[in-house]
Amino acid sequence: MSDVESDWRSSGEGSSNEQSSKTDHGDADSDVEGHAAKRDADVDIVSDDAVSVADSEAASLCSLDPDFLVTLPPELESAAQLRVRDVCARYEEAVIRPNAARAAAERAELVSRGQLSADVAAHDDELALMGLDPEEVRDTSMVAEYSREIFAYMDRCERETMANPNYMSFQGEIEWHMRATLVDWLLQVHMRYHMLPETLWIAINIVDRFLSVRVVSLAKLQLVGVTAMFVAAKYEEILAPSVDEFVYMTESGYSRDEILKGERIILSTLDFNISSYCSPYSWVRRISKADDYDIQTRTLSKFLMEVTLLDSRFLRAKPSLIAAVGMFLSKKMLNGQWDDAFVYYSGFTEEQLVPGANLLLEKLLDDGFAEHFVCRKYANKKFLKASIFARDWAQRNHSALIAAAEAAAEQGSQQ
Image 1: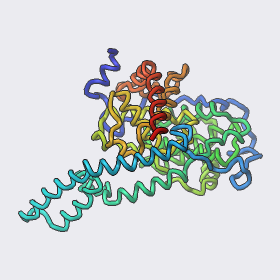
Image 2 (image 1 turned 60 degrees about the vertical axis):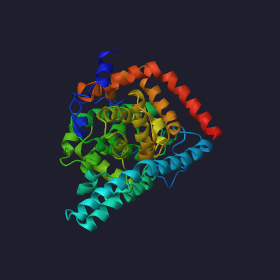
Image 3 (image 1 turned 135 degrees about the vertical axis):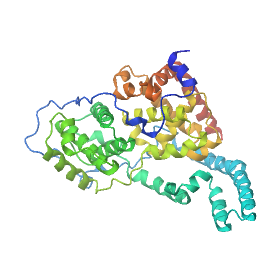
Image 4 (image 1 turned 90 degrees about the vertical axis):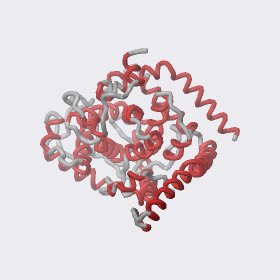
């Protein structure tokens, strides 16, 4: 057993909380491909032949099933969703309701002793039937009583804020590998300035949605990226970096006025719709209830989710699916099971997640993957050397998971 694998089988030392992803690992390198190209004379963020979504059929938002390519074919997907409903009903009957009944009996005893108000007990009984823990009920910042409505709203919003997965087909100068280079640079900037995890996801979502409706020249691609990070930081951070710091991030490749003008163009293009986007982190926090917020699983899933940012194929996946795929593959790597609790809290069965997990494994096994910043970032002990562990596991188990995908698909077709 390697030292890295031994670390993962032990106590999970080194990653203490949600803020671990804000640790600095060195200066950000301004190496986006094409940045050295000759700059346009004007300061427009888009090229002269820019198109809007209303003017071009090619620029229309995705009208295809956004989950296809990273989950089951449509004919198997419907059957899988029926199984999700069956599992959820079974889990509620076997776990949620008995736990709620026991908790209700304890509260009734407290009411009889005069130690608890009957109204409070009735309110807590109702929330317990929703599968909420007492700690969540008492934490007013969790607004636990609205959890179902919140997640239903998030479910609607995640489709509305997805990018067109085919937007590169109408971009003239940029290609998918250039997007990957931009994302890699944004990961470095994000880490260098200790920004929150959601800031990174919002920024890249802004980039992809903007490129879904506007044609951008290669020379302005980095400007789109840094401006998106500027907007995301202003929205998410308590103390966001100033515009001058963002100029410094590009090694003065773009001026203060260019970034501010880019901000106006991006926000108007997206109709100022930034707050509707919910990153996979929002869903991971819910799924983590299934294993009592295990730190190893969460750390590994964070790495795997960030890997999806580099892979354009995951533009077809909803944030909730990305979160579920990351958690599922993490459990597999740690010899865990995707049991009824995970299906209940994620809304996905194992056979729905294996195809996306295989795409992730393919990315991990790419020859040049070790050069990406996300790999170096998560090789640090603060992140339990997650990237090293994940790549070692992928090299040993990739073929086995492909076989599992084929078996799951065959089983689904027979049900």
